[in-house]
Length: 100
Image (cartoon, rainbow, N blue to C red; front, side):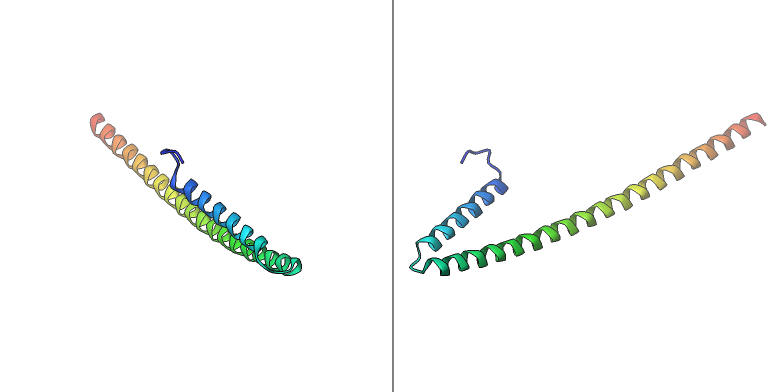
């Protein structure tokens, strides 16, 4: 692998290699074809369940971060609006003082 390969890419390659190795071991195992197919199907279902759970967890975490971001954005907008309004009031007060 090149020096520019990220850690997530390396982890992905490692996982893919592990899956290929596991599949090869299953195919070369001294079991009947039917037993091997059942085992492969069971492992595939198990892997799909794990992937679905992790995807759901990532989606939940992402939506939580999005909601927190929206809340912070609204707070900042409200603070900015209050600061602008306070600046306008201060300007008008000084302007009125200058007229007197």
